[in-house]
Length: 331
Ligand SMILES: [Mn+2]
Image 1: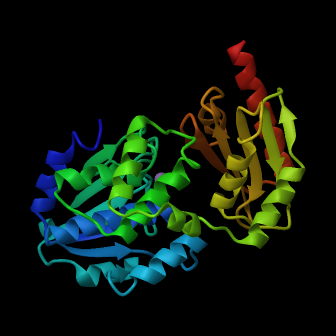
Image 2: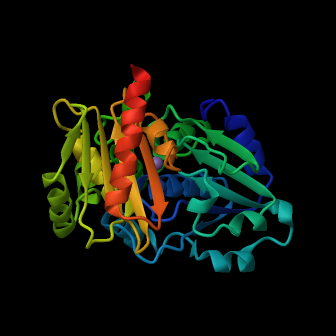
Image 3: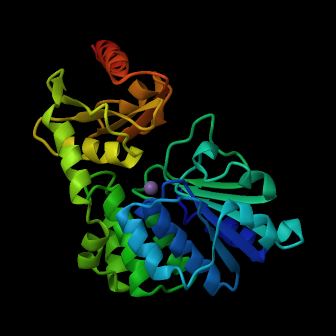
């Protein structure tokens, strides 16, 4: 169900509370921070006391730029400080979760236990590990959480400044990989709407600017790409580097740009003990099904998995096997 159809319920719940604590997935990206700031603005203009709950110690470049710009204008808390700021009446507090529906992706899983009232607004697929508390608004047909939040502006009679509009637009550009993935006429309309509010496409490009060194590392991974079944790109990154999940995802995004490639998989170390797989698909090859077999999840365009206590080589073998099984099933 679309967020606009759920608007009444959303408004009712917001009306009942005094304080709203906004949280997105850990390792904030532009969709997470953009939607958080958009909601912050909507709630602030509806006279709610708002807080952003952020535990990340390091942020990606775009998020750093956004936070530097807003840090004196918005209340930011670490999750350990939340209990000191709660309204004494439980029912006057609301936890608003954006751009994720998984408990384990929250900056602090304990947050959920502090709140009676919870709202989840997200565009990711649900699994057994999804949050099942409160009002859940998930629309997997939408490009990004920023697109969902922008659709609320009208109904909540809120207008936002050009900077927040720019951040919201950058979240959409990021999640659609430049209006390629999950882009509908509504996505373009949302981009139009934000541009009317003053969003600046040039500034979006600045927010999306990447670190050159990290880019070069990613290119090295791409150099060793293998092509499986003629249309699947598989790249394994250097065992010497620990990547952030987003970096693996970016490599997968890039691989999808090439002629003939319908899906891409990138394997890399994401911690000392864990191997991550990130994958992208044009929608025909079921990357979600393949990675679910390895304990991961996602949707038709976008999936990931994390494998503990393994090696790059072993994960590559496992993944190839799953790809083979999947293709055989189709025949
Ligand atoms: Mn997102």
